[in-house]
Length: 280
Image (cartoon, rainbow, N blue to C red; front, side, top):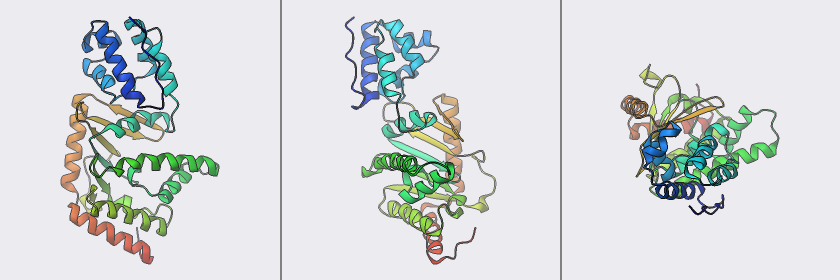
């Protein structure tokens, strides 16, 4: 078959690679399941690659080139796309996040990245990397703020966040930074751009005691779940696992304060920070 044209990594790369994969697979006369079989993945996994909701990894690209006879096309383009502004463990999740129709997230300790202000993000990165240069911290902050541009669209994606009360009480960057950060969240809520609930300390034990949780829903692909730990993260598509995580998020929503009550609490805590009255 003719070799597909190499992609320009600066222009919608995942969608373009996915389209090329579908084209090459169909030219080879293979179904998604038939291509997935020698890769030991499901047909739905191949579908996610073709729709662009999942990143094609190098190890799969090499095998696909061999199976489809694409003379190294997918490997070359995957290597070109491997350079990212995000940590390795978060690259695939960040790319999926940008394509999601809805994001449902439980935050255990920090304001979610999409909702952070520049100074809050700077305080977080400085705590993670106390000896890093200013330039390195500036680059990390810029990448995080670039992600938040997802919310520039007035309706998509839907973002529904459940914040543990600890998120409000931990004074990241000091009282001034926290006041600004919480006010930023309340502005987005009052603009009806996001939905936020607070899970109060009084709720006691809850369904996600082990840590944060993020679900990403798509118009034409199955929901993905992302779980992370320090310097580690995993994007999950196993239906049973995703169903379990969806159920966990539903339980968190049920335990949390209503959106109206949550907004009132966030505004109250922000005011306390502004007046210097905040106590953990």
